Image 1: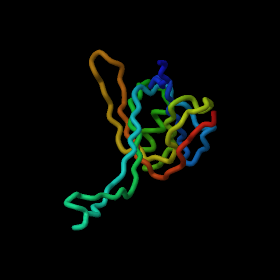
Image 2: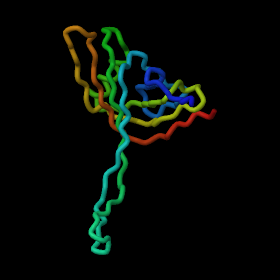
Image 3: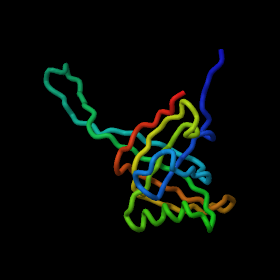
Amino acid sequence: MSETYNLGMNAKLYYSATSGTALASLTEMTAVKNVTVNLDAAEADVTTRGNSGFRANAKTLKECGIDFDYQYTSDDSILTDLRNAWLNDTQIELAALTDDQGTGGAEGPKGTFDVVSISRNEDLEEAITHSISCKLYSWGEWVQVAT
């Protein structure tokens, strides 16, 4: 039996320093190592006495976050844009797709994000990286590239 799967190394993270930029105009972030897309929702307790002793919950507000490791180079304009967004409280546009934006079947969230955390990692035997955490400011869309 043959299985199909996508490798993480084929996934793509795209960005623009300008919020609201169209997907086709976003730039691929090639110095990214590990990316985690977090899709969560808050919950409201809607338990009643008539629920046979079981707690009942209802999904409320949704959250979207994108965390990634970015390899440092001193002349990297993308890292400069990310740092400036954090320093100046401005937003960036991100799209985290399962494949290239031109590949049929690629999918993932796209929206306007705040850079909420930048941590510099200086491991003794590794390249310097930055761990960057972004939280959704304004939802764009769930991209689904037609096959």
